[in-house]
Image 1 (cartoon, rainbow, N blue to C red):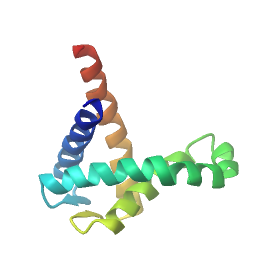
Image 2 (image 1 turned 60 degrees about the horizontal axis):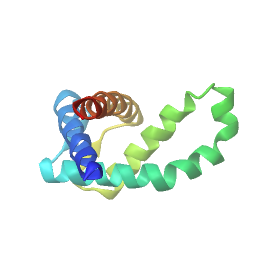
Image 3 (image 1 turned 60 degrees about the vertical axis):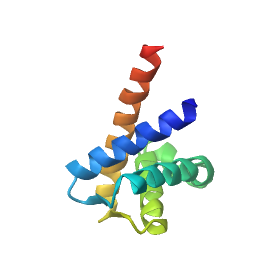
Length: 114
């Protein structure tokens, strides 16, 4: 149940960010849920592999390269889903950063209610 609530909160964050950022588009609310699901799957499967492969550059940049890895995850979701589009890598970086911030705030609100 908690997983479904987090998925829906992420979908809400995706819709809000798509409305705010001109470089990001989502076709509808159903696609926003699908985007949240695909991003979650990619973060759990692909991200650890990318982190291990790019560990030297991540250490050299003191972890800032993780922003690029998150942006690559967003661009992969864009590639797999036709109803979700991101114009460039920089829009993906901004979307990823703002999505992380929104998810932190929304998930903290869920924890405070209990």
